[in-house]
Length: 339
Image (tube, helix red, strand yellow):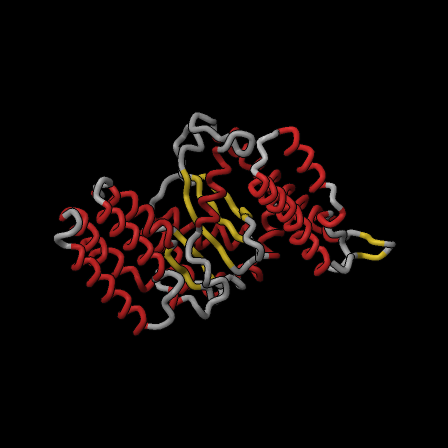
């Protein structure tokens, strides 16, 4: 939409590509290109119903569709593109980045850590975990966290090698303590899949790239959830193509309206007037923390007094609580006061 194009011009540095299904009766995959604001709000730039997931379709999408629909100068500002582990899409994306620099500038493609770890490891290998065995549960959780650490905590090649060596040693230690099948599946995943993909997962390759700290396109997945949610997209698998498209446009418009209203609300909240002058942001933040803390302190003192006198009379407790709540010493601090 025109609004999606405008938002891409404002936030061009990060792109996240994903596909979702069950959105139309023709069973066409829905390709979605998303972005993110600096305060991590989701934005959808382009949505397209694809005829199939063949190589030529995905190549056409990255070579022709996105450069035409999006603002060309903004597209050249792209720094990082996160995609799922569809190899056809990965090849289409990276080949067009490499051979069409006039379109995507100096952008670098990366693999989404959530798709790589959660969808390819967690969902599949968790079936091998004996939940009655504490060692299995501990081992599985530690390995999963270790995988994710590669995507945000590795700064150089030596650190990557050291972390992988320790991970493999940890797997070897689990033999004889954890289920044999679990240890076997974890080791197999590391050797045949995860280790081979570190060149497009490890943080060391993206640490110097704008928005490179974003390790996954989970923001695209979150937008997918809105697509099916009642009261939001409410899209169903039996919707005709035109009806599904109309719902997507409505969802996009609603999403942008919500973002605008949130900005207006935050602006109005920050402009609190006192004696005709705006209150500083520091005082606003102080008030947000001081007032709730004083209320908590009043409650704590009331609880302490009740324990001290071992009061069992409900009426007496009620009277005492009201006295504490209305005590001048415990009244909330007003904005701008010296307390």
